[in-house]
Amino acid sequence: MTDKAEVVVAKQAQIVPAGVGLIPQSKKRVSLVAKIAEKYSVDAEKMLVTLKNTAFKSDVQISNEQMMALLIVADQYNLNPFTKEIYAFPDKKRGGIVPVVGLDGWSRIINENKNCNGIQFRYSDDMIQIDEDAKRCPEWIECTIYRKDRAHNEPVREYLDEVYRPIGKYQDGNKMKPGPWQTHTKRFLRHKVLIQAARITMGFVGIYDQDEAERIVEAETAYEIPYTEAEKAEFDRLFNDGDTFTFWLFWTSLDVSCQVALFNTFPKKERGSDVPGITECKAKIRKIEADGLDMFNSYCEQANDLISLSDSDGLIEIKSEMRTEGWDRLISCLEPEDLHKAIELTERS
Image 1 (tube, rainbow, N blue to C red):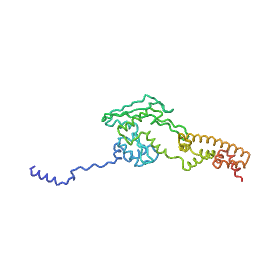
Image 2: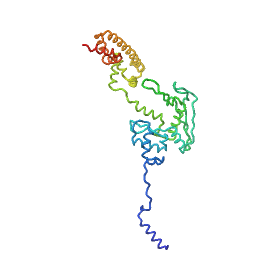
Image 3: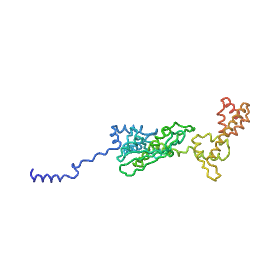
Image 4: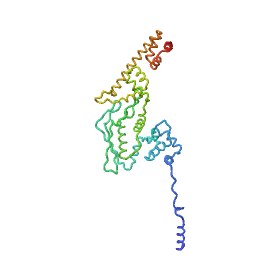
């Protein structure tokens, strides 16, 4: 090719508008759902359905927004939701989620961090048994996560009495089955300090272990008062009135969770104050429970005698003293034959 021809070609090349056919088109943006589905070689729609059914610790319906929130965190920390490295509890109050990372997940994101240079634990020489259900355990455990990019690495210490979780109780006061804090006390304290050290040293945020997530969920429901304003007003009135039997009828009609919540409304005893504290108030209610039951049993004995004597006037007097709620409770304890007779006798004019 001649020099002249080369000049012509060069000039023709300059005519082509900039950006047309010369610059490659930008890549098509891939959604997060498609990205994660491709990563695990699954269908995107089926993945969402599967994870909604398996990656949430809840019986409530999971929204697409909650599912996306979990996928964002899973992608951020490169955690696998199919193997339970990450899952979630729905946040009922705010409509979001409480992301939970299993111990395997925590271990992996710590060890995969490019700055991780080893982990060391140190244990207290003092062994304690925090309650009758727990095993003996060091009073505290320290964890140091060493970083390659830092000259000084600060240990993180967790104390058993600050993180231990006692056995829960049913409404009837009986204990539930022992949890991991009772069966593996030392191991769970070590898990706790490892996770806390990872947060402080590596800066992991917005993720929790299952124990923390359960406490968050419990805290959200802990403030749901199990009694109504009317029940609280009636409780305060009867407690101060001194009518033992009426208070007993009211108190024993409440379930245990309501009774416990009302117990907790009593103030603590202040030094030098004449106002009864929670201990004195509880003792008063326990006495009312015993005295009220004795009164009810006495009414039942009198009623049985009056029924056998067909004493209509005496039975009507007992019914009046017991008032409607007490009388209804009494006749519910009667044998069918005595029940019909009691109703017949008290309905006579």
